[in-house]
Each structure stands twice: as structure tokens, then as C-alpha cells.
Image (cartoon, rainbow over all chains, first blue to last red; front, side):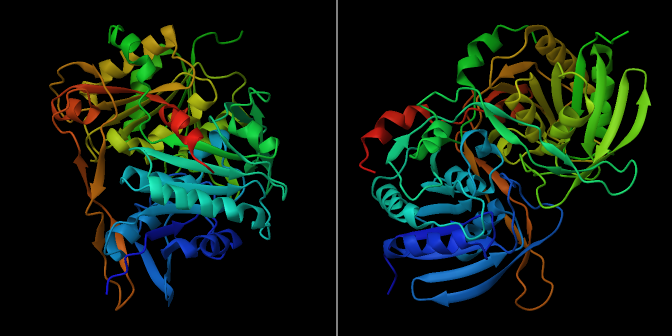
Length: 255
Length: 255
């Protein structure tokens, strides 16, 4: 008999061994049939990158009642393409990325492999959610996020999301969450991004690092503010990146 | 004496050896001082990916009057971060990505390393443009694009672009360009994305491939339509991906 429970496809960018994805699966399992297809190694900062210069492979890791786990040599976006294109016999009802070890609010949405998972689901018309916790530690504590993860996922399964729209959900690094805020993406810039890593004279090796300079740290509408003040930040996110506000002016240019 | 000509920072995702970037530099040189920082190998489909699991290095390739060229072991986004953070003594007046060997219209904007260059410039408040040609061949002919590249870049240098807004410019694969269209990002989905690449039994190796299914092939507002009909498609693109249209409804959810 066919399983009629919701089908939830899960991936992440920290890789299949990360605590965040096993915690996510634990929180989601009561909601449906779970299929995990996650990168076989950490892929932080991979955005929507695809693997085009070599073949990608996947491997079954385990199969339990209600939970099937695969690992994949590709990027987070590859994982979603591979599961949908090769393995699932129906479209997922929900795509979920995370729980990321680290903040994906503000401009981080562009670099985030967690959001790469989510954008891939959304581009294919599937309601999709990314979850991230503002704690980079491998042993980060996801307990406080759990009830919110489950409720947000259950609500999206029930209500759906508008076309071309997904959710970027970030949790503050606190056990004492004040509630949920629907937010705008904070504007700002990363600065001081390179730390020298000398090898030998003139070799110019650097680690990417940096700090985020929020342009409006006091703006209570923004996700970065919500997180700094103890709220869960839910930033509704579009995959239609057309700058509609600039079309009329651009049409007046003599090009 | 300080060079007061516009400073133009150039990168791409096909790598420093690609014809597209040398053609781009040729077209842009009359407009200002050019600094190239491009990946040392092809990085197609890298989106806004960053390199975080190993150090990134750069190397000076050549220095002429008005043209300095570096190569970098990182991604297209890393290239822009590295040039701005370590090498340039002032902010560029313009960041340009391309000319890509291949179409970056429609949903490709999310996967494109060329647009990774452009988004990185735009997030830092610099007017930024990506140029792509709908021809994947290494020896593609960029001649027809040349006058448009120069005019679009010169106009953006003169007028600037609104905050958080950049341009995604795609050229049709024809010597007979009909003109320029200001477009919206076409909506659609990639399908049939995996081609088996057998290694040995049960290994599940696949090449990423696929074809784009435009949801509205007859919609004359869209970039995919413009390209199919011989026009240069200019899609103004935002890096603020907040889904403002969904905020009020989302605030009514009980989360």
C-alpha cells in the first residue's frame, strides 16, 4: 500500500555527519515520511553551486520505516536535484534544509548552501524551508529550536507557500527564545574578510573570514535585529530576483 | 599622479584562460583602468559559493598600462572579495562578470558564477553587470556583443544603478542582434537532469545535464523569450530577496 503521509526531502550543507541534520530529522519525523540526501562532507558557503566538471554519485546509507538516508558527492543543490530526478517516485510535499550550524540571515542568504537546498526546492514549485542556528559549534544545542521547527514545518505542510516563495528561518543562540518575528533581510556588508596564512614568501595564501556590518542595527523589521534580540527570524524569500522597481527607468536608457 | 579614470574590476566563472574574459577586457579597456581577478580554472555553476575549507591564494599574471591581471584559486565570489579586500587601493567604479560562455537568463541566475561576481559587487554597493552569451563553445564569437557591452558599461558608469540592484545581460547566439529588451526573469524548471555515467555495478555515478522548460515561452516580457527572438536581454536583478508580498499573510500565521 502506498504511503500517503507527507513526503519530506531533507538536506543540508554541513554534511551528513553534522548534528544539525540528525536533530532536524528527529524534529520532523512525526510529520511524515523522511528522505535525506545530504553531502558526504561539509559544503558550507556553497550557495546554489552545482557540480558540472565531474560526475556526482550517491549511496544509500540506511533505510528504516519512515526514514531513508542517502549521501551524495555533490553540493546541496545537487542533492535535491539527484533525489528528485533519480530516487523519489513522487514530488516531495516539503523540502527542508538544515539545521545549519551558523547564521544564514541578512546577506548570508546568497552564500548559504542551506538556502541552496531551499532555493532548489522552491524553483521546482515545492514548499521549502531553511533552518539555521546562530551557533557554529559542532556540538551546538538545537533543543530550543525543536518545537519551532516542527510547528513551522507542520504549518507549511498544511497551508503551502506562494509560488516562487520560500522561508529562511534563523534561530538565536539562546535557550530562552522570546517568540517569532516575520522579518526583512538585513542590509549590510561583510568586512575584514581575509586573514593571512603565510606559506612561503610571496605566496599570498589567505583564509576567508570577516565580520558583518549591519547598515541598520536598530531596525526592528530586520532578521539580524530579531536574532540579536532573542527572536526566531522568519524571512520570507523570493527566487524571482527581477528588480521590478527599476524596469521603467531602465527602459528610458538609450542602449 | 593618481589615475582618475574609472576603475573596473573584472572576473568570470569560466576561468582566466577563457576567450570570454579576454574579449570582455578588450571591449572595456577604452572605458577605464582594468583590474582582472579571475579563477585559475573553470568554475561554471558556482553561484555565490565561497571557499571556506581551505586557504585561497592569488598570483599576479601581468601588469600593463591600464590593465593588471591576477588569478585566484577561489570561486568567482572569492575573486571579488580578494581584489577588494587585499589589492585595490580604492573601491571599483564598476564590477563586471563575463563574458560567460553560456546562457545565464531565467532561473540560471541562481547557479551562475558570472552572476556570483555581480552579486558580490552589488552587495558591496558597487554598480555591477554580468554579461553572458548563449553559446557554450570555447571559441564562441563575441564580436556582435562588443558594442553593446561597451555601451551598457559606459552608461552604468555614467548613471550608476539603484541600491541593491545589478544587471544580468544575456546575448543571443546570433550575429544579427535585433536590439535590446529590458526583461523579467523567465520562470520555469530544469528537467531530465541526470545522465548515467556507469563506473561499476551499483556505483550510481551521474553527470548533471538537463533542459530548461520555460513555463511561459510566449511571454514577451521575459528574458528567455528575448534571447530566443534575437534580442539582447537585460534583466535588472535585486540582491534583496525578501518576499515582501508574503509578509502580511505570514504575520497572520500562528507560529
